[in-house]
Image 1 (cartoon, rainbow, N blue to C red):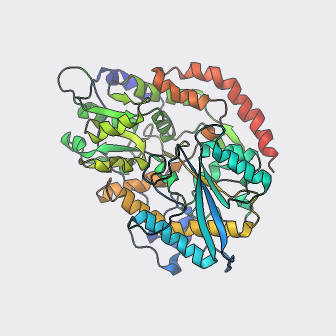
Image 2 (cartoon, rainbow, N blue to C red):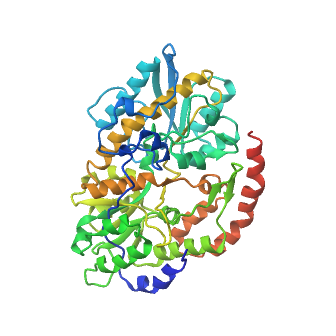
Image 3 (cartoon, helix red, strand yellow):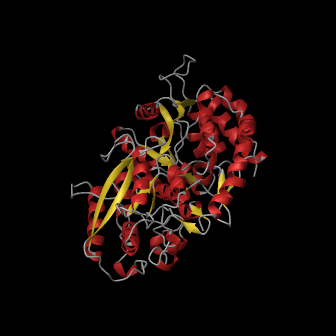
Length: 507
């Protein structure tokens, strides 16, 4: 891999008053709906073709679930939320994914309702849900889960949680090993395979992400672009560039010089067209987009820390130089809503965000599209779309659940049914219904979802190194080497000494 191209063009970037731009849409792999259903487990994205007819019932991949019923037993979901947000459409809960009371005419709501009704009728269960806040370290949510376990109350048959916090409950032995379930098949396409691999601990999987969830998809990193600004500057063929696998940070920077626009006063402000706007998390999006992770799960099921060698430090420093020192870059670390406002007001070409930000952009009148996070350079094989740990959702079954057969069967059934119904409606309505208006953007979105990526180095890190990396974007420095020097000893102890021993005790 070439590692220094950004450094070589940094002088150019620094000279720009505003840079970064272009529109783009991307292609995708072969349509999985046209493949033999038996091959669908090999699909990275784990999703049926969006916008196409749902496969006939006989074409569905079998779930291998028993023909049984559970006498109207309750399947109660405990769902995380933040700041008491319980209403779909909020920043932390853009869509309801677990349970709804009735048909409302909203397609996502009704699709979840119909999915639940199908599973309830087939297995004679009653699906219900409640929320718990995960705002602080000692949260009502975590306290409720622990109390439920300690008292044996068996209140929740399924819980969802941010991957950021899932490790706590794993190490406390509060969750069921889904890999040992006779009814849950984590190799099936309704289970995201990168989540299965990245959330494995030892020989066990206490957490994973299935198509039952919507928020994990909403928390996927992407770039929104202003189609008018791109077209005004002559960029109409970026689909071909991306489809060929050539959408890189270098390509983005080269286009940026053309698309930048100053109103003539020589001052970069809201009267100009900014190249990009983002928050502190964008650094993580770009690092993962470079095909790199802070850690990966090794063959023993233990997170192995990867960051710290020359290549990783160089790449992260290049990314910081790109976002901290380029005049085009509007960092909104202290005002997250600012980035949406700038983009909606046509002041920004590129908006680094997450898929769920489409809910905020609905009022935008200018056409816009969605891009994958660019590759670091042309030698990188694939795009990579980080699932952001602060907003995502993973699921698991509490170990204290008494009727494990029921919990496991219903979870697998809901996940499989969602694969063919809820996800299709989510894709077509929430995404394609407004933010992407042509076939090229539709195919590009498939690339984003097919390359979702989880980073164990983020959610297993209790040293706060990952938090310190985020805060660099607010300090205006790219001195990654010094920061790493301050944390490397603690990281080594955590990942080389503590975690192997802790995870060995789980099995």
